[in-house]
Image 1 (cartoon, rainbow, N blue to C red):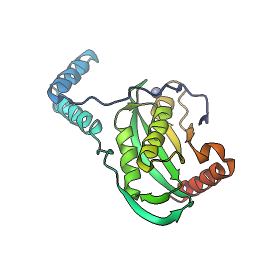
Image 2: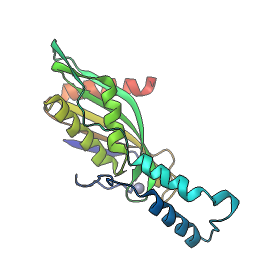
Image 3: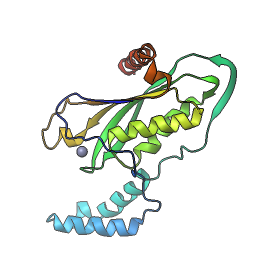
Image 4: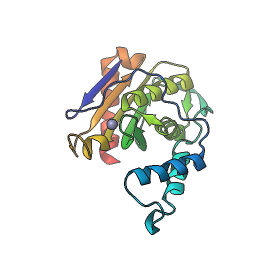
Amino acid sequence: MTISVAASESDQRASAPGPGRPALAVDTGRIADLIGQLLVELGEDPAREGLVDTPERVAAWWRAFLSPDDAAAATCFTESQLSGQLVIVGGMSVWSLCEHHLLPMNLQVSAGYVPDGEVVGLSKFGRIAQHFAGRLQVQERFTQQFAEHLTGLIEREDVAVAVRGLHLCMSMRGVRMEDARTTTLHTRGRFASDPVLTQQFLTLAAVQKSTA
Ligand SMILES: [Zn+2]
């Protein structure tokens, strides 16, 4: 189940899960050339003092942005006595790029699951967030990808992911609503079928957010 709530009129549209994959190899020389051409088309002189190294800097940033830490390696620990406890990791903040406008979006992420004999290494959650943020994205797909990845990691369906997004494409262009936030929630397994569990997740995730 996915619920999307826009805090204000949003030009974000739900996208089907699909591509959203970063390029495998980034040709920084080629990107620098293209940025230089873009500067010319924008009426700038790429040779002037302030811009002379800009194409290389931008190209290096693209390479770093599209090459986040690998989230594939599983880090799970056996805790055979642990089951039924709700675990929530919140306060995760990552930057991604809106694929509709190529403008940044800041995503505040909370993820929860119910362990059954195994727990996920806590730092893993932040890496998952960075992994799916480091590409052209929409918040709705990011939320779903995070939940699906977590499901694969714990090999169970009982996961929930809530994301609160600040989108510069809403804040600095178009409707220019600086305070608008978009909230997405993806629940699976028990979180999708048990409203009490979902409410517990949302309440605790909100606490983590307000004290972060
Ligand atoms: Zn956008």
